[in-house]
Length: 182
Image (cartoon, rainbow, N blue to C red; front, side):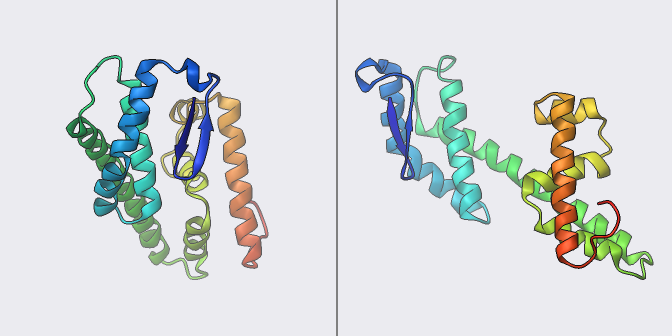
């Protein structure tokens, strides 16, 4: 099956002739409702990319729950999207709280502004790298817990931490503060 999502074409292992009726119906359902769900998310979120992610995740959840719920109603999609938007709001609040905490710690007498430099460098990281460092160093998750959160093995989790630390170190080096370990 081949489905076009925002200009990208996605293929599955089956040819169009082999599509199940459920898949064909879901593709039609997706095409009818994607832009409505995207607009719903975009009106509630601060940026278009996040709205696109919420819309895509809405249909991913809908597809995974299709066997539990045979009917396909727009109201059901709005409910899924609403829950995902709530998750995004909570994620943004946690991020803001952590940035506020970093700023407060920087204001407590760090005369060489290392904390401010670190905060700026963290903000330049990709979200995934920043989140991994937050979980590791601020939330103090163990290797086992981090792996559980990331959905991977402990070795993979620590590899991700290593990559995130290297990315942070590269940013600090670019700013002229790359001495020592990140």
